[in-house]
Image (cartoon, rainbow, N blue to C red; front, side, top):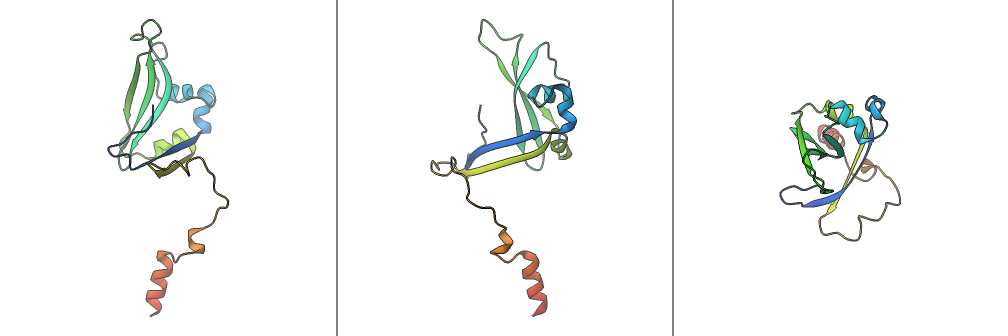
Length: 137
């Protein structure tokens, strides 16, 4: 399963650290997230997580439905849990979240790493600087 939106203008990767509050349920695993949402573990095994949206977003638990799975053919469901615009829910789930995006057809840079971290403001005027300069004129 991969992230997918209407046009996929950008593609990339994501890394996250589970919050300390959630890891108490079952360690640093998806099972902790399932337990936080009170997922029926007798029926479902959580295998992934999808976060979709910006202003209002939803979280979907990607799960194997053991009841609908037959003879080694796993039936996978995306179980949406609508959390609306309550962005603090991300802080409940994760203590750190890193999203890296590249042009969708870029095959050169997604596997490379940067050589140095710098600040944008070291090379560009910020809006605060622009406002200050404008007020001085």
